[in-house]
Amino acid sequence: RIDAEFLIFGGNKNSEASHSGFLGKQLLKTGKAFVMEESARIAAVPVFDGSISFNKYSGVQEWGNEVLFLWVNLNSPRAEVVNEFPKNGRQITWFGGSRMHEDSPVIAKLIRVGKAQHHQKSTDGKKESITESLASSSGSGAIVLWCRRYIQSHKTFTPYACLGRLEYVSHEPGSRPLSFLWNLLDYDQLMRHPDKSVRETFQDIVSS
Image (cartoon, rainbow, N blue to C red; front, side, top):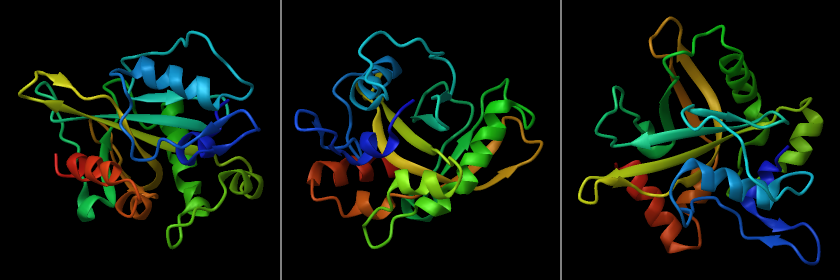
């Protein structure tokens, strides 16, 4: 299980543990493994500090409590599809893996959890508690977006950055790969973040 609210927005779990939140921040090291290990170390319930086993080739990572990570590579030279940010970054297109189809359990979960996210939208830069939302919506969970950019001049990817929660908008039945459109629920907080580096990171990603 992972505490998505604490992971994204931060806070104080107790007198000894505090976290500033990952929203809009690029992590210090590259790769999915570092994201997974840091997420487990910081926000796992119960506390976990060990190695994480996961499929590094999948575009989706499921946690035990209806929380999912969505991974997006931008500007990849080998990409067969292109992820875009419509509406000036308020939305993102995402494509399922080659083995994913509409009957795949993970796709069904993404749609179910994504449709429930209207309970958790930000209003005037203030978030509704995900914990409260889970209680009121029978465990709706959260979909957390992680993006990284390929830097041509360095021939490598940047570390992943957390762009917050996603809400399901639509998908194209029968498309191969499956094509999705999501809302970025924390767009306003990313655009108005007090940390200039967060705002710049978000703009760099959206304009990729």
